[in-house]
Length: 163
Image 1 (cartoon, one colour):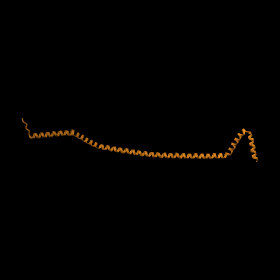
Image 2 (cartoon, one colour):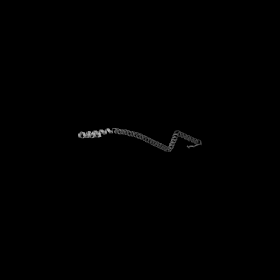
Image 3 (cartoon, rainbow, N blue to C red):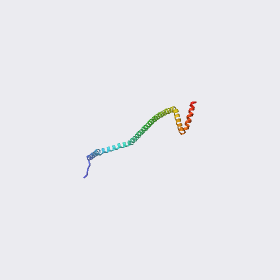
Image 4 (tube, one colour):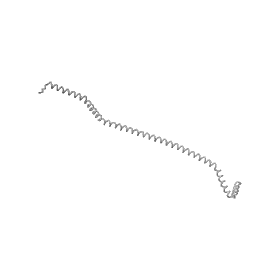
């Protein structure tokens, strides 16, 4: 038994094989190829993102450094302004204290001058009476100790009045 192959059988076998290939291609394409293509596409997208991630990271770091430098500069400016204001307020307070102390000192000096002038005028006005009082006290002590001197003193004073 010999097999003979005719051209129609060969064409039929080629057609069946082509149909078989088409079925396998459809199963592969609709079953596996779409998910494989999607996976490959997502990997391509991730690779692109990773390529740009370093650049984006550097950009973010640069922006953060610039922002931090700006914040530091603002803080330094604010600090400088606060120090200047504090110095100005301290100078104003010092001037105020000096002015108050100066006024108090002038008031004390003025009061002292008034008091000195008052004491001076009182001493001048009471000088004669103080000298008489002091001399009288001194004479009284002397006369109490030595009564003979009292009579000699009275005699001498009366001679001075008569002449």
